[in-house]
Amino acid sequence: MTLIDSLLIDGTAAALVGGRWHTGDARFAVTNPATGETLAQVADLNAEQAREAVSAADAAGAAWKRVTVKKRAALLRAWFERIQKDAEALAELMTLEQGKPLAESRGEVVYGASFIEFFAEGAKRMAGETLPVHAADKRMLVLREPVGVVAAITPWNFPMAMITRKCAPAIAAGCTVVIKPAEATPLTALALARMALEVGFPEGVINVVTAAKPAAVGEVLTTDPRVRKVSFTGSTPVGKTLLAQCAGTVKKASMELGGNAPFIVFDDADLDAAVSGAIASKYRNAGQTCVCTNRFLVQEGIYDAFVEALAERVAALQVGDGREPGTTIGPLINQAAVDKVQRHVDDAVARGGRLLCGGHRHAQGENFFAPTVIADATTEMCVAREETFGPLAPVFRFRDEEEAIAMANDTPFGLAAYFYARDYRRIWRVMEGLEYGMVGVNEGLISTELAPFGGVKESGLGREGSHHGLEEFTELKYVCVGGL
Ligand code: NAD
Image 1: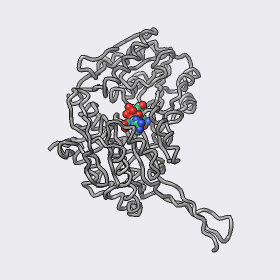
Image 2 (image 1 turned 90 degrees about the vertical axis):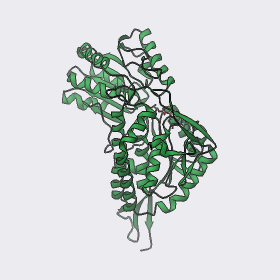
Image 3 (image 1 turned 120 degrees about the vertical axis):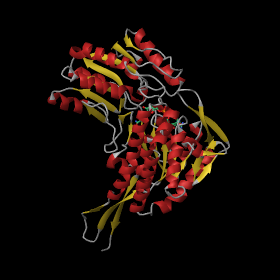
Image 4 (image 1 turned 60 degrees about the vertical axis):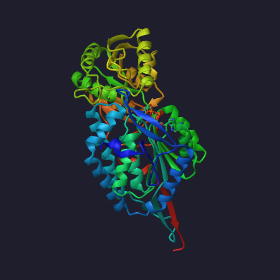
């Protein structure tokens, strides 16, 4: 039996509401972006059913927060181990519904599971405080308590990791969760939930609401007063809408939104290392990663050598179905994504950009785009301002450090930035000058469960991963005991 088969009830991949598999009243198709083939019909829940999920999470919350942290950690550990048993099947499922090469899906299983392992341990180290007093007859304490019901709304580009990065710390802290996965990739979410139920999570602690059109369900999750925190990863426009909806009931909100990452190469950089970092940071997941480089900023003295070396490496990337061995660039998620990359390429070329490779759809199929490098990029181009979210590398030129920092910061976004340099004084100056939540110095891959992930400006609010990611799911309660 495949993992998809294990999710089917009467031919429908069912949602999870209060420990019950719910086939809903309608269904929607999930397709393989590489082939267009339908993978499964999935339950299409409505607003009323989303409210049932909130009720289930709310009902389960009172008991769950009283479960000892050791027990919660043991369940999370069991979930982590259950995932290991089916790691290969989960990776294959992600490649099927999202398209990324199988090697990257395997990497995501490791990365996604690492949050469960980390927060199982981290919860045991959560602590409150006792404070010095200002009056002899008083004592003061700070308790750290779970925030309550959490709604986790996640994107399609990391179908597993974006869920575990939110749910593992929430559950570890004593919260219950309602997950609303992206409509393109709900099967991975359902497989994870099934594994969690198998290892013994109580009913209602984890709920998954699948829906073809997210707005109605999203409205429930952001306006129901029983939901106390919304943790969202996705685009900045949707994040702004959800934040506004959360305002009515003053919910806590974490927002992991879009980016416009600069990748700066200074004249003194190690060229080979910079090109390797560029490939890793731009082309993994076919460029559909929120921390993906969007703009290469390269200093005059190294510019020609860098673009030549980059274009050579990019032309050698292998486009194909993610299941084929050797594939390094899979399909984009859908036609709209392909259209956006084409629009950015056409705009850049029309404004004087020099196409070094790619620049067009790929013969492999309608969702594929050839990996592209465009030199002589300028700040008037769409690629300077908008997140492309595809395999396009525009390379801008700069004269000096001051100009590079100004160009890098000239965006409303502030998620990830990268730079390559060797002078240690420059490294400190640039690191401090970048208005970003995360900076890779001579490094193109920075995500790990051990470090705080998140952005500034319109890239978001809050952090995921590390102990900061756990604290996001807790509230502080100050207690003053008097009359001693
Ligand atoms: P999206 O904003 O379209 O969708 C994200 C999620 O929100 C999906 O589950 C979708 O169904 C849901 N959604 C959409 N409209 C909604 C509404 N009105 N109410 C409730 N839910 C709604 O984003 P996407 O296209 O899935 O993902 C790509 C975007 O996500 C990119 O901008 C990328 O940069 C960003 N992203 C950010 C991070 C990060 O950590 N900062 C990580 C991954 C992706």
